Length: 314
Image (cartoon, rainbow, N blue to C red; front, top):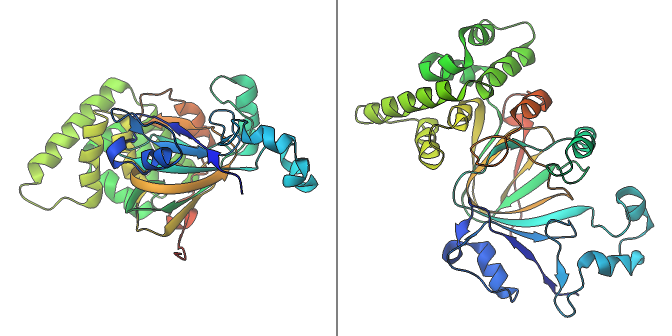
C-alpha cells in the first residue's frame, strides 16, 4: 500500500478551509492549509494538471507506474497508454454553483485538443460518476417537454430571451423535438448579454415580490440563489431547462459525455476518465464556449438521461 500526497485545487466555488472536506483531507495528507482560501477539489491520479505524489519520496504516481508497468498490466497500457491511470478520482467541496457545462465525447475531445490545446488540455472524454458525502444539489440533463412548456408559459422573462419563434416550435410539438429543444436552448445561451441581464433582473424582482403572496417553487428559489451567486447571468435562466436533482449521502449520479449539468452545493466523491475537459456556457467567470456546448449536447430529455442510485454504505 502506497501513501499518496494529493493535489488540492483552490477554485472560487469551493468551500473555505474550516467547512471543506477537501481541506481536511489535505491536512491529513500533511499539506499545509490556508484558511483564507477556498478548497474545491482534491485530485487523486496521474493527470498532469494535478498529479499525485508518493508521500515517502516525492516521485509522482505516474513515475512510479512508469517504472513498474506490471502494476496496471498490458491490457490497460494498450488501451489507455503506458504510465497513466485510466481514471481520475476526486473529492469536491461545493459552496457556490459550478458552471453550466458538459464534457466532450472522445471524438470531440480529440478535435478540441488539436484546435485549442491550451483550453482543452487532453484528448480524452470525461464520463463521470459522483457519490454524495452530504446532501447534494445538482442540475442535470434537460427537463421533460411538459415541464419546459410550463416554464416557458409562466416565465415571460425566459420566453423573451428564447424568442417567440423557438418557444412556439416547442409548444406546438415540432415534428423533430430534439431540433426544437436545441433551437430554444441555443437561442437562450447565445442571447445578447444586455437582454439577458435585463430579463434576469426583471425575473428576480418579480419572484421576490410574489414571494410575499405565494410559496415559490423549488426551481424559483434556486433561480434567486443562483442570481445571488452569479448576478444577471444567462445560467440563471438556463436552470429552467435542466432537471433539479437532490442526493442524500450515499446516493450516486452518473453523467455521460455531452450531457449538460451544473453542481450546485454539497460534497461528493467523483470518478471519471482521466481528463480535465470542460465546455462551459454559464454560471462562471471562466472562458465560455457556448457555441461548442450547444452544438455538442445530446438534447435527450427527462430524468432517464442521467442515472441515480443508492449505494451500499460501509
